[in-house]
Length: 70
Image (cartoon, rainbow, N blue to C red):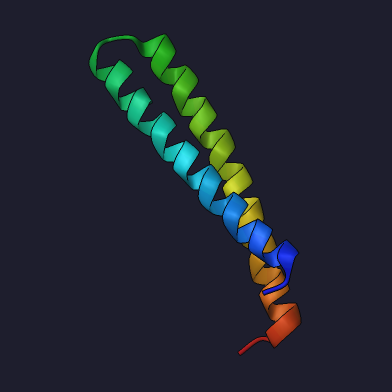
């Protein structure tokens, strides 16, 4: 797999993992009534989600470029 394609898959996975951690922290803080802190983590999770989606999309595009659409 070309290096750039591998990087996109790796970055997508990393950002999904970071988003999941922030969602868990948001849930924890929300349950404790710390809504401002929960909102901070929810916002961070959303940012990671956007980055993950970008990298996943780029990886998919590169797969099509390399192997065609089926």
